[in-house]
Image (cartoon, rainbow over all chains, first blue to last red; front, side, top):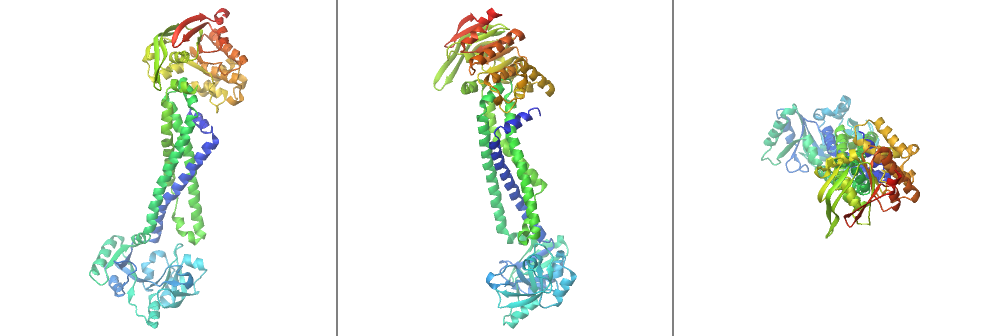
Length: 387
Length: 231
């Protein structure tokens, strides 16, 4: 500890240089920490979104290919399936010119409350939806966005079907991040029939399994049931479904992590350059210190400690800055639905510690080479060179 | 006692072999103030580095304070220097971010002394060189002469037997040079230190006991200085 003032004062010798290098390290660590929250945040987002007993059944060719509506009854008959609903893209827009601004689907009113029981619907909302042909369940995010409330009449023009339908809002889908809009399958089907279109297909089916342990078996059974049929099915858990749906986002996360590694490497070079300059301009002093009896190991340790201290202090500031930023984003997401997913990007203690260790590692790595060179230099040759 | 026997030092400078010292044998008795003098390139600084344990001879034996320096490892030499040697350089080489007292305290960081004791010793050393009142000043706030006196305080704070100086007056004006030479003389006279300096400064002859002359890496002999007559 008696050498700490020695290290600290040398660090503050050129304040501007230390400040600039520290600033670069701080920003890099803040960036790395924030980016590192993304995979975990994405996972949290999926976990919030997905239930562990809900499975999706869709055409094995992809979710844009439909399946016969009759599949719904057969899925409901599989042992272990508590309930199942059909799920068909309506493609409705409040303003057709602006296109679809929230996802909307035709669903079966009788079982929606069971399949999505984990969302915690109010009983009167479900009752209204079950008993009103034109009822609609609307995600809280969309309700907020358009300022809608229960009982409001909403007209959507479909850009898929020849339909313009008016709905009465039964209530909200009680999830802050939910933008979805659900309408009744019967209303959708009858309206199509009135428009001269017969539609006996479903986009996909959501089913709830009675026990999480039975999920893999139920999925296998369903897929086996429709094997070699006109529309073979691919069943998957809700989390897996959304992971595939947001697959491109995960690719982006990978790219971001690669960028993070490169940023770290750049910072190592910047910090190493600073350490080299700091050592080079003190060669004479270092030679004198060696002359008066400082061993090379001690000088090496103090020089590396200098780089590590600068990097750690700056890294700590960067980690705290990222903590503040993610908390700020989380708070902002509370009142701004557009920022909804950002509330999942939480700076954990583990990430904070990782950020600090990374900063410390950057410091050590950047200090080792110049410090070793300077500390091992012979006193006599340094004195010859600098005097 | 400092004793050199047939000491030679060769090194490479680019493609050239430099013979910095050739078969130098000499003795410097304990408690003497000696100046190594000679033209540039005569090997004075090389000789000083050798006897101070900063460099190793290519050939020959060096014995200082009863220890053979040739046999010591780098770490042993560092320990030896810390315990037995004090250094004064031409350009003072104080650490600019430390006060005068903290600079003087530096060699004591290598000892087991407690902070209060280190501080007390540093203040004593500064008192000896007449800078007790300037202990809290930073090097940039001190004149060249004062900085060199701080460097001398740093050299003696561990109470070494030997103080070596490489052109200690080289960067000072006449008045400060005289003061520094007087101070080095005091170290010899009042504290019994062996003082060896390399210098071009003819004024030094009046303060030292003996002048050792070198030319082209060869020891040419010695002559008495004015300091011997003074004491």
